[in-house]
Image: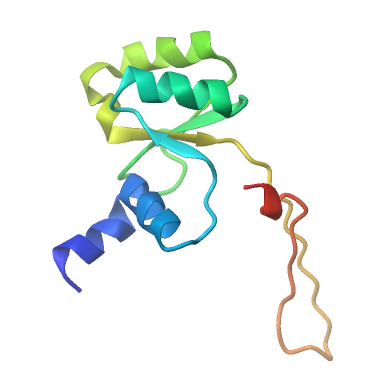
Length: 116
């Protein structure tokens, strides 16, 4: 695996862009590079949103944002490091797992999955 391919697995923004390019459904997202792109996102995607570090694993550093005022305050707090984050639509996904001894596999569904 080359460096470019490996980057898709480490960088959440690169991964989302690549997945979207390949036709994989992803939640609405934006990079945090340009104010105009961020403003456009907030006008088209209703709050709440998640601001996430692009490179960290687990839930470390994730901030749930409820409105534009809170968003711009948080981006001011991030300062020159905001390019290391992305913002995405907050979506609740309900996961139902059913185990039946007669079935050798786990079956799942989500009522929100179609709306990501």
